Amino acid sequence: MFSLIIYRLPRKISIFKPSSFCEICHQHLKFYHKIPIISYILLKGKCPYCSHKFGFNHLLLELLTPLFFLIIYINNPIGLNFYKYLILTSAFIIIFFLDWENRIIPNLITLPLIVIGLLFSFWSKINIIQLFLGILIGGGILTIVGLVYQCITKQQAIGGGDIKLSIAISIFIGWQLTLFTLFFGSVLGIVYYIFSHKKSETIPYGAFLSLSAYISIIYGKEILNLWIKYLSPS
Image 1 (cartoon, rainbow, N blue to C red):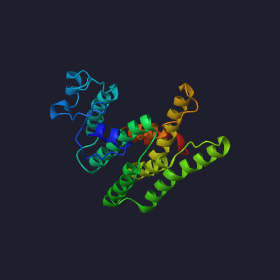
Image 2 (cartoon, rainbow, N blue to C red; image 1 turned 45 degrees about the vertical axis):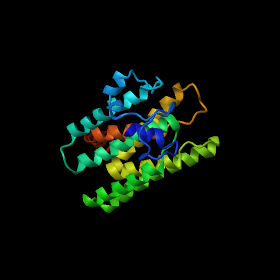
Image 3 (tube, rainbow, N blue to C red; image 1 turned 120 degrees about the horizontal axis):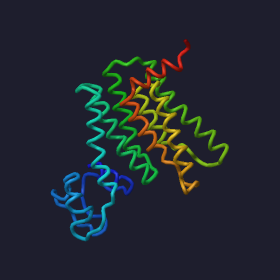
Image 4 (tube, rainbow, N blue to C red; image 1 turned 120 degrees about the vertical axis):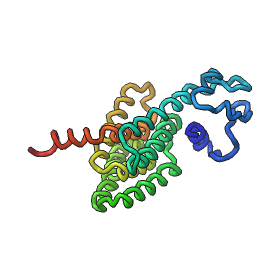
């Protein structure tokens, strides 16, 4: 399902119909051609009709998705947080590959994510001030950084999709972990830029932001404890 969304959204193809097909020969795939991991291995990563290679990303996506879900399950008992983080992780996986391959973060993903995050927040009766502070930090910091960078370099560094994603993340995980997410995501972006062969290429910041936020979900308690230990006044 995730592969279908990642392929079709940038191409403005409905995710509901038609059924899965080969992008080269346009033959529709049978249900047994779409069994995660197993079908890819049996078909050797190729279309069963024209032998077009599907690409390693398909297998990578099929391997990472259950692994990331399993890690969420191990760290969160079945309950509100489990379902909340499962939804957030699903969005992260889609956004990571979309931004990495196409440099886009669709409103179709980020806006519903913001709404769902608000619903979870009201359901868990979160402090309104804390919620507002998270939104302000999540969207405000990236907006300021983006404007400053654009004024200096005359190039856009932070897109609207990045800002909406950051707001969604702040609603789900709180302002403290959002600060870490923004910091660590920026570090990953800088490392990518340093080692990138195309310095003029847009940095897929949304992908790094998603990865950083997922780390915050898993190691949130440890991160906050370190935050309190080393950054709080003694």
